[in-house]
Image (tube, rainbow, N blue to C red; front, side):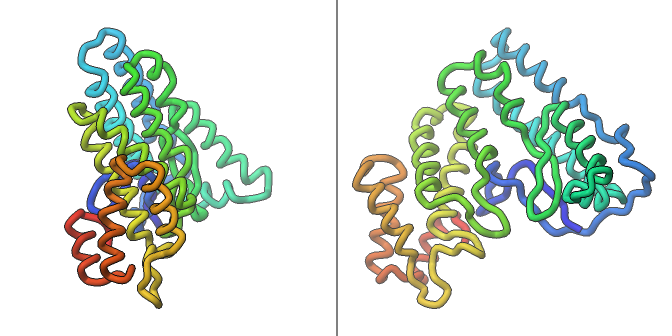
Length: 283
């Protein structure tokens, strides 16, 4: 059995909301003859959203503090719902029904999906397993019109990671150019978030995406397993980006890394590994 964590993804030791992480765990046995929806308290998200909207309207605190409080608590609610979901004895039946072609059987999952989405979440599936995720439309609804332009930009960047998942099955599934574009966007936004509540989150996103580019994941490594050489396509994309945006934060990070690679014949030497470890990248 697997435990679906739909909230923050731990990447390079940092919490990162970029993909819904699936980690192996032992299933807890909970006897139940049905989905026992009474155990799912679907009211938490709406209560949180209402209190957030009220706080924004009354300007009780700066926008960045209100928004980060909302997102952290919303993430926790999603995680708790998945903890409940995975404990049902009939989780497998629910999961299988969602992937079934038989209409009568599939209705079970469709009813549950509707319940999830009616209450501010997203019903999702990865590698054949269903789970509950964050609903970006729900996050943006009413919120964007009440916040300042910087908070508006942050919310959209935050939601971007959920709307287009970067990784699945231990591999990167978006293009190199798109990954670089994300690094660039987080890097430029970091200048605006320097003194805001968003700062830590933005830094985590910036460096976690750089880690995906510099190191990769098990099934999409940046250094070839056989030749130990850095991927030419990624190298060319970074070089082109530096030419176009040499003074950007992303461009400066790329220049440092490429100089190091060049000095070591573009191989993953111990010097390169040590450099990545010092920057807390995956490796």
